[in-house]
Length: 57
View 1 (cartoon, rainbow, N blue to C red):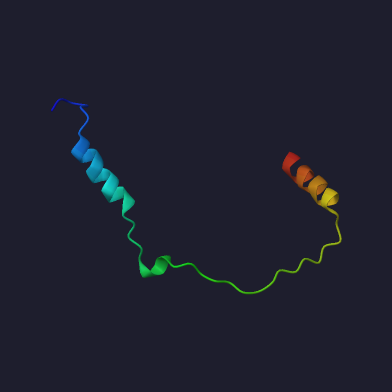
View 2 (cartoon, rainbow, N blue to C red):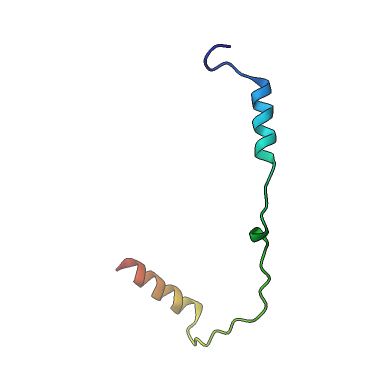
């Protein structure tokens, strides 16, 4: 086989290898319970203005 020639068997082997996902026990999703409270009095426009000002500095 010449350099750069397409090898169908190699392509299939790599596809099989890449499609197998090895999940360890550490990869589980965590479930979080709770709530988020926001005590700000600013409006959305005020917050966006403040954000733009911070980014322009």
